[in-house]
Image (cartoon, rainbow, N blue to C red; front, side):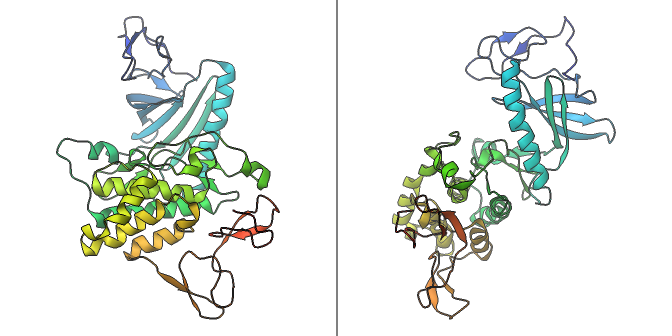
Length: 365
C-alpha cells in the first residue's frame, strides 16, 4: 500500500532537487514545481510494514529510505518507485521488476546487496534490500581535504567489481551494467569493504544481430562511458571502460574524460612510481576508444588486478605458441584464443572477441 497519509499539521515537504527546493504540501509525491519525487516523512509506514527512519536519496524514479523491519528490528533500505500517471507507472514497474530479478540472480556475489523483498501493492512498488552503512566513494573523494585512495586498495576493489561484472556478462543473454562510477559504490565503516548499490540501469544485450544493431535507450554518465555506449549500443566491454574510469578517479581524485584520459595516461606512464605503472597501463588499455583494444572479459581484468601485473602473452593450449594477450587467434596454429563474441552484423556468423574483421565475409566488426 502507499505510505500512510501525513497529518494536516505536518511540515511542508521540501523538494530535494538542488536547483528547485520548492515547498510542497504534506502528502504530495511529486514536486509541484519540478516534478521530482518527494520523500515520505519519518514515521510513516510503507509497504504496510516498514517504518521510515529517514530518506537517503532521491532520483528520477523515486526515493530510497532507511527503514526498520519490525520482524527483525534491523535496518533495511527501501527503494520506492513513484509515478502518479498510470501509464508511466506501468512502464517504470517493468524496470523495477527487472532490477529485482537482477539482484536475485546476483545474490551469490559478495559485493551485491542482499534483496529481502519485492512488493507491489496497488499503485506502489518497493524493493526491500540490505541497508548499507557508510558513504559512497564519490562523496568521500569530494570531502574537503580528502586524498585519493591508495592504488593497492583501488586495485583490490576493482578485482571485486570485475567479479560482479563477470557474473553479469556470463548471463544469457549478457547483462550490461551501463553506469559504473564511484557514486554507485558504497564503502562500509570498516574502510575496506564495498558494495554496489544501483542496478537500475542494467539491461540485457539484444537477442540476434538485428536487435543489437538497434540503438537502445542511451543511459550513461559522461566521462565514464565509451563511444559505443554514447550512441546507444553498449556491450560487455563497455562496462570495462566505465570501471577503468572509476578506478582512475579513485586513485587520482580526478574525474575521467573518457578515452582522452586513456590517451593522456599513455604519454606519462613513467611519471608514476615503477610499482604502480602496471595499474595505469591497465586503465589506459581499458579506456581505449576502440572496444577491440580493451581487455576481452571482466574475468581477464580481474586476474590482472589481483596479480598486480599486465598479462603480455598467452600460450596456446593446442600448440604452445606464445601469442600476445587480447589477440583472438593463435599465431602458431590459428586456434581460438578468445571467447566467442557477437555474430557478424553482415553474415551473422560468430566471431571471436577481439576480432576486427569477420573471418567468413571480411566485414569490419
